[in-house]
Image (tube, rainbow, N blue to C red; front, side, top):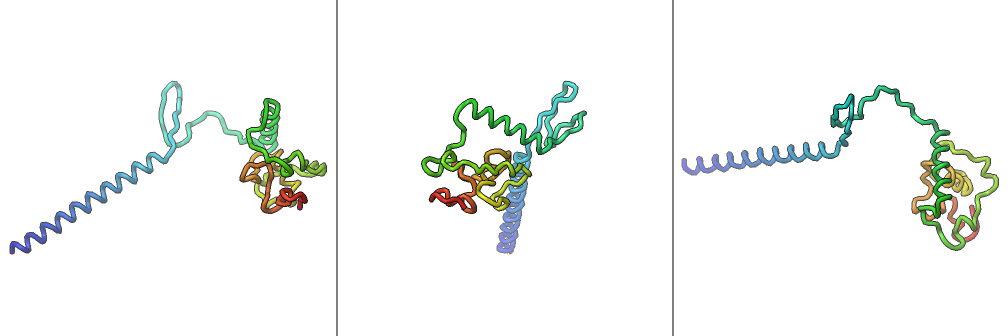
Amino acid sequence: MALRGHFFGRQKDMLNRSTLLSALAALALTAVAAQSAPMNKCVTDGAVTYQQGPCPSNQARKDPTLAELNAAEKKKRQAAAASGPAERPRATGSASSAANPVNPMSASFSCDGRQYCSQMKSCEEAKYFLANCPGAKVDGDRDGIPCEEQWCSRYLTGTPR
């Protein structure tokens, strides 16, 4: 009988421990979830509130058009070029963009929302997108040579594809 009581006492203790561990795990998950949600500070009629969703607004939000985004990016790049050297490092030697200017036919290209090398058809087109289109993701290593693996790899050896 004493042995039986000891067994159930141990089982009860293990049950309490597992319940406690489950509660602690749930608490930790809740804390992590609360920290991962961004908080927004909203001021409405002088009252400050903090909430996870966006702040309410009396004005309708107007999403910018692609032309407006392109114009803003072009203006930003022109200002950066006028103020000094570009913030992105450029390649040196034969791979530099000065040694390999963009084809004059680039006037036929336009910023149409494409972003990736897989969407380009030539090295010249990729260079145009890198230089003129915001959001273009064609220069992963930021060396000034777009789409090195697909289109512009031969610039490193001297002959573009």
